[in-house]
Length: 474
Ligand SMILES: [Ca+2]
Ligand SMILES: [Ca+2]
Image (cartoon, rainbow, N blue to C red; front, side, top):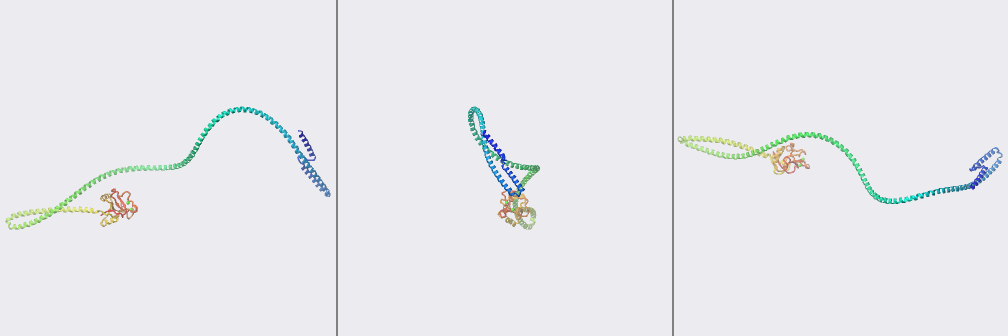
């Protein structure tokens, strides 16, 4: 404290000295000096302005003044320097003493606080001892708990491992499900589009169903009318079947009659032969009778000589001759009638035979095989042509006659697909094999009848160059 006072008194003195030389403690020395210089210069300038004649004197005075000023300034500067060093030393000393005092206070405070802290720590030690006891008991219970927890941790670890595997499998499942969801979404989109298209289709189908229902109603009415018609046709078919049976029986009876007639013709032919022989014998008899008449005439002549005696005999004989002549006439007329009858019969039989023969000549079934054109040429050379079949009856008759495949007079040689008979008439009704005519290979233009097939389905087109038997018709 004493040291501090000494420094303070010294400092006060120094400050008083500073005031004497016109400088303050804040270091305004240079400013005052400049001010003084400015003032001096101004004054010198004034002096120069006032007395230009005393220039040299003034100049020397000024120089002297300036030198003095510089000297004073140098002294002031040195003094200031010294004072500053002193001040720095004093400041240092002041600062160290104040630092010691502060440290002492601080130490006292620290001591007080440490004492306080020691008490607190003692209390704290007591508390901690109690706490330690409690912590030991806690530690034992915690050890127990730790063991339990370790067991629990193991279990949980195992459980965790299991859960991790479950999690990984579930993650896999999730990924699969996500993929599945994507697929299902795509499928759903597709199904929605399908659904919309199906809805559209359903509407169309409903419209179609309505149309079809209307059509069905119409068809049902048509069906009922057709059924009615079918019943009528069935009745008609039954009638026709009965008629056909009747015609077949008629045909068989006619065939029987024909056979009887043929037998009759044979008998009549035999009778005719017999009659011819009778006629020749009668002729012979006539000749004999004529001879006899001659003889009788000779006898008459002979008897005329013995007329008287034989007149009676002659009359008798004449009567006899007349009788014989009448008998002869009768025989001759009978003969003529018989002859006429026979001649008529022969004529009718001849005509019948001619008809039969002509019938046989109308159809000619060849035994050799030729191409269609050769077959036609063959028929035409005999005043005929290949057969034309324009009715079911004729088809049936021809079918019953042939045993081999035969050419008929039908072809599409001129215009492909347009069938024409050999008399240039068009085809109206054909008895084709199923699938024919097919113009296979584009070369089948001539028509054959194949008797190995059903009676009304046996025509086929095939190349005209093939060799077949054939039927000519006049
Ligand atoms: Ca053809
Ligand atoms: Ca064919």
